[in-house]
Image 1 (cartoon, each protein chain N blue to C red):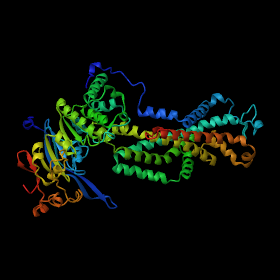
Image 2 (cartoon, rainbow over the protein chains, first blue to last red):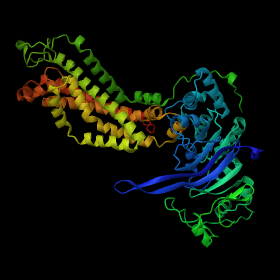
Image 3 (tube, each protein chain N blue to C red):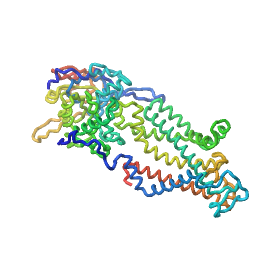
Length: 325
Length: 304
């Protein structure tokens, strides 16, 4: 793939999303949950950036903030050369057609009272005046492309299984022919046999529709299968971002090393050394000073408690936020 | 695997039996015998009341002292009241008034409650606080006292009088509970990802509220409305019985019941108050069974 020469489709600079904590009788803001704290990355056209991290590390919030479903506290979101983080109202609505989201839970992401045909044609009707009959044909075509029978058009969400419902969700995201798709743990609610089908469908569609993915997941093998580059998040911050090969062969950040050592090895004779992390993830409302990972890090130095490391390029295409490098 | 192509698709094919959530609820309701029987009885009562001027030809405005307080006979199936008016005719005309008061109150209350509940639940923030504090205020007002007082004050200086004034006053004091209920359902429903999805595919807030949230909260609105309908018929009867509801000139079930305040009528002339009492009871019972049936029908987890 010659993605390296391609331009950036999306650039995220110093993105911060804080949730205020209200307290006291007057409901004054007494602090912030720093769900996303100073995250920067870029996605090139046609590539897939995987975003991994444990629950509550801010990966979903990052995705939602990029879509402006959640307002950014600070930072820039540059899409196709235009900062969209300050857009509101009609302009925001206009730009939304270029990026769509695939949601995590196929059971709650489809309106139970809407016919599948209405669910997937609604985005188009919101943006275009189209011939109803032609639209219906297109939508039935789209249903076939995502692997559903065309008469699914007349059915309702409750008549489908989890995997099929996720396909409906994918069809809805594709209906507008967006440039960027943010997939927020699209397979974590599905069972393993269905997961691979949906993942392969996503890959097929990427080629067919020339899509760019931001793929959010907590399953490392899923991310490995899907992504060209991978970003690792910990406590609202990006700790390491690199090409897939480089990340899996030589993880640099101690947290990434621990994560990758936890991937199950199918060969029982192969000896693997698991790094067991001590302690729990600190609260994002009161993150530790310095490097957010230092209380659990085996290689922590005094410096780590004081200064927060910033992402720096250690090797070509491999950035890490750690004082060890 | 993909054998179908667009050219082979007959785009006009449609399922013979619809599986829409509404169709499923309707089928479930039709299978519920108690609810269906109640529904038929209620429809008969409503039809009779609506057709009162055609069925009951006796004039209810004329007082005929010669025929006063007669027991049931071939001429007067349910006897006559103190003014010599035919009780059968009165009970049908009274049904018109009582049912209309109940129905219109329900419509107004649910309209206000659903709209405000949707707004408060969807937008949250200061609008939510503002609406809910008004709701608290409305809910703490003692209902009967305020209906009587407001009705008394407004009856002299308002353009609308009589029954419509009563409807407006009752509605204005009763929308609090409905608002609260709709809001709580909206709060639960809007956490679903399909609301976020609706936003991400470019819907306006207005469209999200009325196209996505409303259809998913309307089932409890309908159930609540049925039960409220029963409650409002009782409220009308109660107020009128006390002499503060529908004006004396207008026949209503409550008005007919109020004649039973005299112990002579209560004990010796039962034909004057038993028909409206039975009709009120039967109507309310039917409405409640229908409400229960609807509740089951809309509940996806019940297989009844």
